[in-house]
Amino acid sequence: MKTDSSGAPYIYTVDWAGEVKIRSYRLVGINTGFGGVITGQAYTVQAPPGTLRPLAWQMGDSYTVGIGAKQGSYNDFRVMCDALGLDGIADGISGSGWTSLQEGRVPEWRVENKLGSITRKPQYIFFSLGYNDWSADIARVRAAFPPAVAAARRICPLAKIIVIGPATPVGSTTQLNAIREAMAEMCAGLDIAFVDVSDVVNTANKGLYTGSDRGHPSDAGHIYRGMQMAIRVSELL
Image 1 (spheres, rainbow, N blue to C red):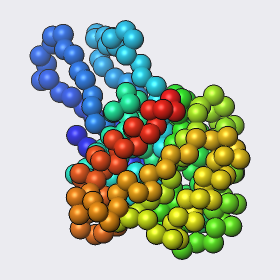
Image 2: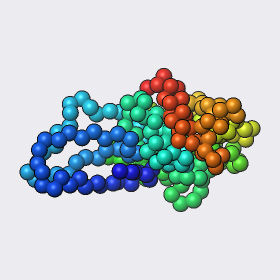
Image 3: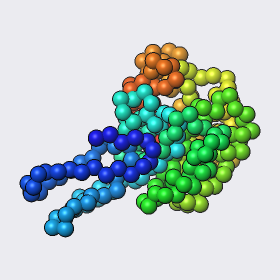
Image 4: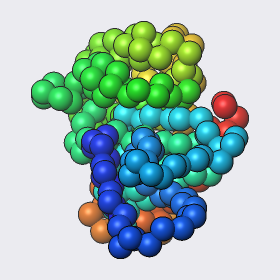
C-alpha cells in the first residue's frame, strides 16, 4: 500500500474472507502516523507492550513529499525516522518555502492547521524549508520563521524543535548559503537546534545522489540524505 505526504488519513481494508485466527501485523515504511485498527465487535486488538515510539512531525517541501524517491514513504525524513526509531508524519508541499504566500502554504498556517490537528502530540517537530526561498528577499524569511516557531511552541510546548538547513542537490550556492546563514542565526537566537546538511550532496557526489531533473534527490539520494540527517540529529535527541 502507498501513502503520500499530504498528512491526510487513510483507511485500508484487509479482508480474510471469513477465516478467523490469531494474526500479528507490523507496519513499516508508511509516510504517516498510525491511527489504529477497526475490527468487528467479536474481535480484539492488542498492541505489544512497550512499543510506542516517539513521534516526529516535519513541515517541508518537495523533498519531504519524496519527489525522486520510488514512493513518497521513502523520502529522506522517513529514512531518518526509521534509523532513529521514530514514528514520523511527513507534511510536505512541493514548491513551498518560508516565503510562501499562497493559501495553505504559509508556514504559520501550516503549523496551526496541520500540526494543530494531530491528536497525538509529537515529541519532535522538524522544519525543513528554504530550498525554494533561494531567490527571495531574506527579510521575508526572517519575518516568516519566528511566527511558525511561536505557533509550534504554543501547540506543542513540550516538543523539541529541530530545523534542517536548506541544501541543493548539486552543491552549495551563494544565494542558498545566505538563506542558511540567516536560518542558523535565527535558530541560535530562539534556542532551536539547527542541522546543517549544506554540503552532504555536493559537486563531487551529485552524480550518485541527484535525480535526472537536477532538482531533487534520486532514490539513493533520499536514503543518503536521510542517513546523514540521522547521524546529525541523533546528537540532539
